[in-house]
Length: 366
Length: 195
Image (cartoon, chains in turn blue, cyan):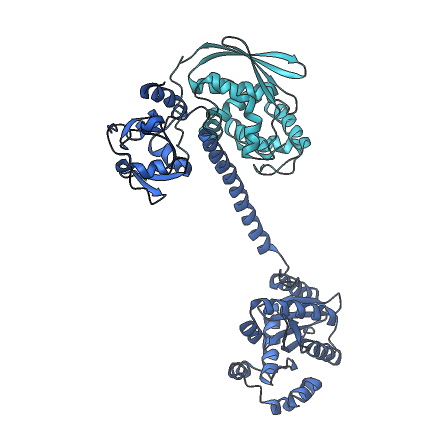
């Protein structure tokens, strides 16, 4: 029969975190690694449950409870600092001579290795802890390399987006592209007209049905604009619900009015989203490319804006051409009216006779 | 070849010869870029061009440079992670040598698409070893030679290393352990990099 001491010597090599208890639940001997966790502590004779706080199973109060939980996974921690968490399993020694408890760190091993300055020699040769530490470190290094790559890609993506000419949501040109094309057309002296299109009631769709609905509407709007124009024309989304159309080589008012009218009609068709219908409209201001007078892009856009606000002021779903008589006061007034969201002044639209789109006017009157 | 390996070459050349020499090398290799990403895969052809260009531009025999690179990978603080991972292999140099058999598998555990050819250590007499570096990675044995040399310093052991030619398609490195605990060696704190 093996003595307590012989068993302790053997266990020290195989399970360096063992605890041997006598029949009263007092510690007889501990393994070398466990001793290393409390180098100055004299363990002998101390009740096991005074040193360790049993977290699970909660019911364990004394040695009898411990023996009753032989073979069960025990969770505990030191009562004093650092309260390293341990797990263990207990087996009774023969002839009621006490119990043998084997402990391990479990997931707290990362803290333990650091807190107690453990080395490979502190773990049994069959223990997988060293492999686990290796893996943790190797994975952290690999993860860090991946994270660095992600950061660099993210930076490159932002830079590419800043340089891009495309609006990612709609696939239309963006403001940067529009500025570029407009500048080129002005400098080459080509005939063209510029339409500033502003969606009406878009904010209401966004507010009541959510951004996903808003995005779907913008995508539909983009495809309608592509349908209503030719390949040579430029369509750009220059703001949330603002678009600029550059119609190449066309300065005929009747034809332009026709395009604008068709556009508004198509945009007023309800757009289905998530079982509901989104109803929007559009106001359009158009400016024709200046004949011989030199003009800059900003001024041209401003004039289109003035016409647009005149159209808004006229009660929405309207198309106005810019006239030199329109001034900024009109815009201020129009802006106020638009803010007040009056859709009532249909009477005013008659004032602009030839400029107004007939069918839009009819609808709003009806 | 894995980006980690290409990146290691980049780190070695930049640190030893300077960044502008590195750009000369990548220009000469006509890669179209000069920064390798550690976590991307590059074609074997790209890596081959790189090594050829290194020899041409830096005007040193490639095996010599690769051996220096192996030493650099272990001893340069810039790449401390690799040295630590190798030290996990054993508490002394002999244990470390034996752990080399597992090195390709260990590498794959850390980065699943990192392929290293098999290594096999045979003890021919007490303190005498042969390391068989299998085919599959150009210059593998040269790099391993540098790694073995630097790790001996790391453990504080005195060893003699020799290229012993080809045997069954594998390049063989002879290792003779002259003296253990020859020098102080470097400390290895198991938990230094955790959390």
